[in-house]
Length: 288
Image (cartoon, rainbow, N blue to C red; front, side):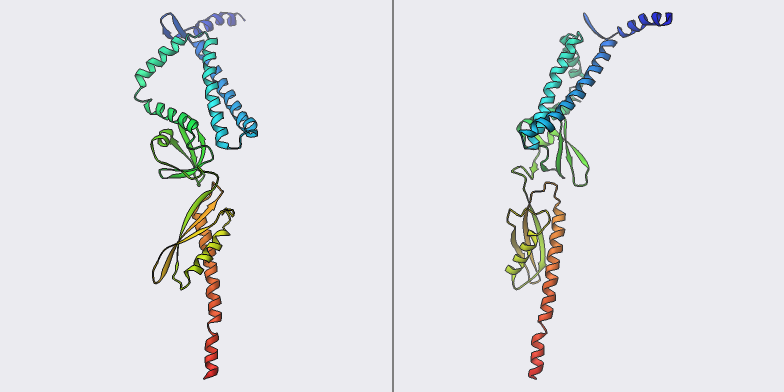
């Protein structure tokens, strides 16, 4: 017990050691520990409240997932800012100390933090202007996928391989971005096809159109369009436009399904033609 009482003043002295003295004010080790604990609690509570707001409250009034996420993100940033100011005030830290620290960091790290600041402003612009939102199917550069998360620094895009590509927010502000689902939930995809030449191109187009309507993820409420792009003595080239309301669709899966369906139909036609063709030959033999 005597050892404990003798160690207590030493611990107090250690905790009161100045870590960052600035004129009349100074940050002690105890203040740093206090700030770290409260900041951890603030971040955890803010994330919990953000999820609760998005999944429990806003879902009752707002159907668009992207709008709910944007409002939740902006709410969390406001709470974090206000909470940080309250924590600094309760810790007895003068805001001028924070200003001095921020100024020192700004001078020393201005060049290295330039991209981070630009990305943060880009994240705010995305959340406010909403050119893209969570759940949208987008293409940025060579990356195609669904927007899974929008943070201040970067945006996570989930590809069809179920891998997350982290894209800096400045790419969405300064580069060309294709939003495949900007106008609604439906997406139109184009499927090129090359088929053997035929004396009845209209019949081939009708056959391909009927096959495209039966695709598993095709939007049955929107029409299929089949265009004849070019033809030669041996082949015809078609471009098939199909709508889908599944944002996680894969164009190559569409093309594979359509190729299989058209191939089956062509085999049926070839088989039917081979059965009908010998009939005139038999009649000619009887006439001889």
